[in-house]
Length: 318
Image (cartoon, rainbow, N blue to C red; front, side):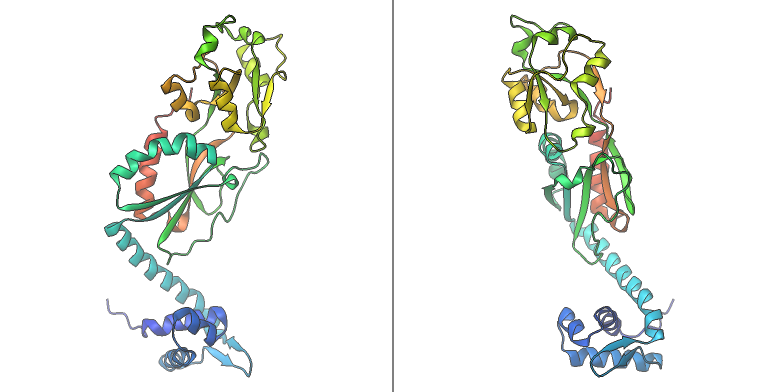
């Protein structure tokens, strides 16, 4: 098929000038002179045999034809940019930004990441953490996770802890964290051994008091109820507001705490922590991979998504 189109440069000049309503600002964006922008627009108007702008004394306005034309020109330029970027990414990889909750990144994702980077050295990976990736307990939908520019060389993905409702995004559930009691192996063999959940009455209960996801995190009261244990004051013990310090206290034998099993796999594998009871309680939310629909089909995203879902599938959701 033969396409009868004006020069691409004139379409770029029109889109920039229409967006800024200024030849000067469009010229600065495209690194040319205002005169060059004016010539490009004039040539496009001659090609179309109609005016696209009204040139006022101190302002620039789109004509009705210009307003009607702008969305389709913008869509076309974005399609061109996506096609070029997609092809370049397939050949040479790309820059992938992964933003996730701090604890998830530090205690689970980073442990699994070496396999991905070894298999895909062509992908320039940038890891970031943000507390904003943890949804508030009353959040049902989240919109506008990021502004996506299809001309950008970088692709941004998010791992969120929430309920999975993210408008305008492609969403994959990774896993629901399950919480269980954990402690130092020294407590199992001490003067007050932990043989059954009721033995917790003779031990210090450690409470996670960090403000993030406070109301969505299972409590000792809930866990003891699932375990069928009564007669223990679920509010007694030591309260710690830093999650890292909380696990350090458990490793050091200060007491017993509740922890998400996927996030303590390193400590359990190394023997620094043990799970004395086969009793778990699920959190009300889950971890999700969230990608804006506009970039969800980029090869760099597909590769990371396939790997991440494979790793998440190994998590035992008891």
